[in-house]
Length: 124
Picture: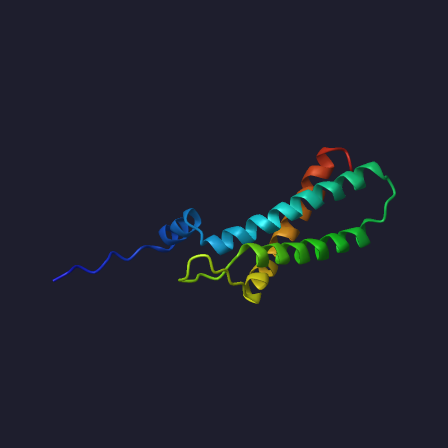
């Protein structure tokens, strides 16, 4: 008789998932994080250099651009698995994965930039 595999606990399962993320999810997060960081640093620099700038429309544009570009990059980077070597297939689901990865990344980066880093650089 073979022994049943050991049942992992909740935190052990989450730690294993954190150490070994699925490649499509990792690619979606990296694509969106790269776009959000580059554009976020530019947005913060503009905020610091132009004292009385109206930031609300720029922040809204930043959110839209990061979500759109991150979704497109994820669509281009994440391919469906296929048995045939060399055959590349894409799906709209890769773009949706990019969309769902972009939303929390944009929010967290905006909080980090304008609630943590900007006050440290002297912008109240």
